[in-house]
Length: 370
Image 1 (spheres, rainbow, N blue to C red):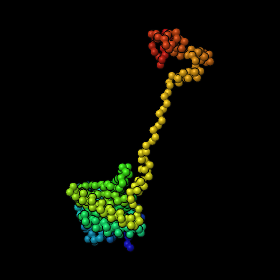
Image 2: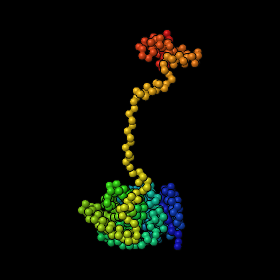
Image 3: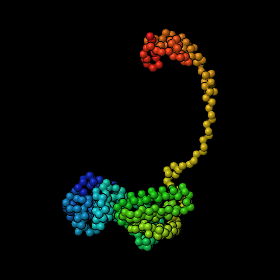
Image 4: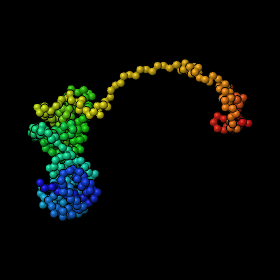
């Protein structure tokens, strides 16, 4: 088997270097060729077979779409991924209509980009791997037939059976734009997990809830099958007021069929798993009412003060100061500060009326001598 060739084309060298190094992390044998312009990309494409073209939509000279058409003359099976800084829907529709398998806005979501590369080249998917067990293969074959029939019946673009880990167990059809499939399914499974938690909190007997997103590329409807699987439906006008009830009823009907197939294959299901479906770190954070704290005993403040006075060695303020002077001897005093004895003579003892001072105040709580 020949090594797939990926041609990266962008006049911004930092973007080319980022994509080049990201592709190398995949671990797949790839020939990666860089080109800063459409003209140089055409020259590189004339020297080798190109399996995947990754190009900026706006290039100096020819556009990315024009480059794609010229390179496809020599490489008709070539897959194309566009990157762009333009967010207008018209430009995006042009790129998808030209045959691009994915379109990414800048800054480029690398997980989705690498997954698109693996899908486009038919490589083993490492970024978003499907279930790989033998049971999963049997499951996918049986369920895919069921989902294909349901998709055709409701005239949807795609139906996905997703596990609680965000893996696609079975699918029928494709999204209008699968560029951001990794990010989309990851976000939807966050909603799915939150729905399970709400169902547990309100003690639902069955997982009777669904989530609707109307407008954009597709209308999306997400409905849980059990505590480990969910069903995603995508298509145009599925959530219109005159159609939404019929769509939901159809999903509820096929949900029962899918659940029966899963049970026949020995896959655990049922609402009783709802408790274990909540991540451990979330289940630990669930509010648990605490016992009411015992009321604190009333404190008799007067009794405490009386006890403190009895235990205190200081029985009298005058005695305290006399004892302190005897122990310390002659204490050099600040000439601007008066002693306690002098304060008594001036009538500044606690409980006595103060007298007017004739000198200015110095420091805190001190009077200058006359």
